[in-house]
Image (tube, rainbow, N blue to C red; front, side, top):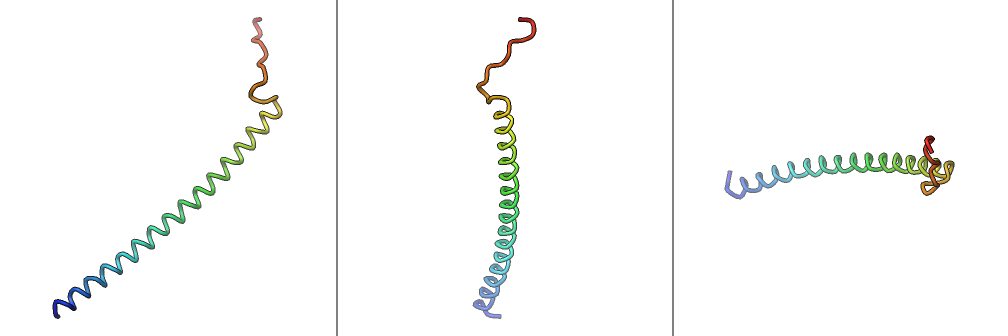
Length: 70
């Protein structure tokens, strides 16, 4: 095999490995975005619940009743 053929073969092998690494990274990014979307939905649900509780209790700035010993 000539030097040129050896170099071409090395480049082909390198490209094949790079394709696999790129695909693996792409799958990782997809999985992370799915997780981020799920966490975003959970956060929004919790924020809605907190807002609902605040609305039902008069909000965060409502005066607290004095302790029982007063």
